[in-house]
Structures are given as structure tokens and as C-alpha cells.
Image (cartoon, rainbow, N blue to C red; front, side, top):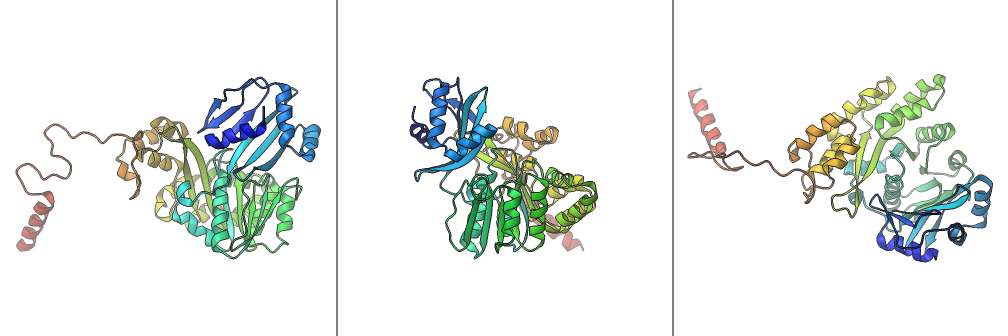
Length: 406
């Protein structure tokens, strides 16, 4: 079994991941579901051979010492892969994630102009959150590429591993990889502050020191991007504050209130065609009201503020799910399975689509409710009442008569 043939299959099938483990056929994750390849069942010798064909001596040594190793590599000019090699039950296993060479646009991802405008900010903390496999790296790569194309900045990234390689455009890109260029996120971020950065990307805010340095970097005049494995804006803020000692939490709230410019929480869902996935978002943007809630420990009210802040570009995850459903992009089951408030979601799914769809949103077959049929004998939508003039003319005549009386 050759690794190149397996990798080519992943690229051709546009799978997101491939799992190689002893006692099982190679498995592809297609649109969120696992599909076995029609090959032999893998044996111990197969996974060792496949691992050695793509793993450097340094990573093999790390596998021997600690039982796992992560790295990235390029498959010719077709794609890059992020690889995790590990030991399980005494055998070697691999999981490879496909990283397409082509960066997505904001329209492809589904993010609004409100979010794009934040990328012109000179300073602040911008967090992209969600579970593993929700597309955080892809969203951040799109944002970094936008800055790279449109602003003359020095962008420093600290990643584990480097997933998307960014060429120098208007900006200068410095990309550092854990274990290769720098030992830890906290060390990479601390050193970045002495490397004349304008924009800093931290692949993951895993520990207290990294969080503390990221917040300080945003406070001292840098645009800082980071990720967390949280599922809501409220949960993201609580996760950061709770990571600090009790004595420091008040100061952290003040710093976040002043420097946190956005939290974008995202989830990937299978679309109604079964051939792709779409992203749902919860978007919280900095406003005076949001900053005040963070500062005064009223984070539990943030969801209500997001709901009333749609004119600023904010959105709750459940509203995003309802919008995708009414646009025909996801099924009712997917919306209900991913929502946070099932009872409220049921009502949203029964509401008229115009309550959620923006002008230009495309209605696709396969999802969303059919328009309700008119009761027997009722006029068609937009038709004048039986035997009379259109309602708009009746209203105009009534207003003219009332004006004459006055």
C-alpha cells in the first residue's frame, strides 16, 4: 500500500480527513461522515511503513519518546496535510487532515462585511472559536490573506503545525512552527513582540501565559488573532477569565472589555445535497453595551445583546442555523441537533423565511419548509380582495376622505 495513492484519493474525493489504524480499512471523512476505502484491512506493518514514508526522523524520535507527534507536509503542489501520528494498543496510527492550497473568500465561508471591516483595525483581540474540525484554521487563513493583500504590515504567526503557507504580498509574513522554529505558543508570542509585528496570530491559546501575553499584545497596539475550543461568545469570555487566578480576574475583565473586538464561534454542518458542508456562526462584536457587560460581570446577558445587535452584524448561533435552514442549505434535523435552545428553534423553523433571509439569499431545494397553502377560497398572495380594488388603493382613498373631513 502506497501513501501517494492514498493521498491522491483524499485530494480527488475532497475528503477532509483520512484515518489509518490497524485492523481497519483506510477511512475517509467525507462531508462529516466516515467512508471506508475498498482496500485491504491495515496491518501493523502497513501503518508503520506508511508512517515512515512521510515522517521525519525528528518526529519519529518524538513518537518514540512521548507516544505521539504532529507535523505538516506538502503533497506536491496539490495540497498540504496536517498529520497526527500516535501509538494505540501498541500499534501505530495516523490521522491526516487535508489543507487545500486554495484559500476561501469571505463569501465562500459565509462571513459578513461587518467582520471583514474589523481586519482594518490597528489593534485589538479577535478570537475564532469552535470545536475541533469546525474550520477555525480556514477562517483565520482567509483573514490573514485579506490583510496580506490589502495592508502593508508585518504578520507573525505561531502555529502547530503550519497549515496554510502564505506568500509575501503587500505584507511581510513570518510563520513559525511549534517544535521546528519555536518550543511553545507562549515563547513564540513573547518573542514576537520584539520582532516589530503589526499583526500576530496565535494558533491556539492553550495556557494562562499565552492568554496573558495575547491580551497584553492587543493592549499595546497589535492586532492579535487567536483560537479557543469554546462554543459561544459567553463561554469564550468565561473560559479566558476563569483561566486566571481569582485576584487577577477583575483586571482581565477590564482588559477584555477594552481590547476584545470580536468573537466568532463557528460550526460545520452537512448541507442538504450531502456533498458539502456549510458553516454556522455566532458573532459578537465590540460595542459599548458588550464592553459594559464584560466589565460588570454580566456576561450571562451577552446572548440578549447579540440578539438585539443584528444591525451591527451580530448573530446568535441559533439564528444562523435558522437562516441556513430557511435558505435550504441544512435540514431541520441538523438545525435541531446543533441548536442551543430546542424549543425556541422549533418556533424559528416555523417562522416565515423572510424573518431570517437577507436580500439575495438563495433558496435551494432540499431544505426549509414549503410555503403554507392559502385557505380554501382565500385570494392568492398579492391579489386584490374579491370584487374590489387592491388594498393599497383602498387605503389611499380612505386617507383622502379622512383628510377632507378635517
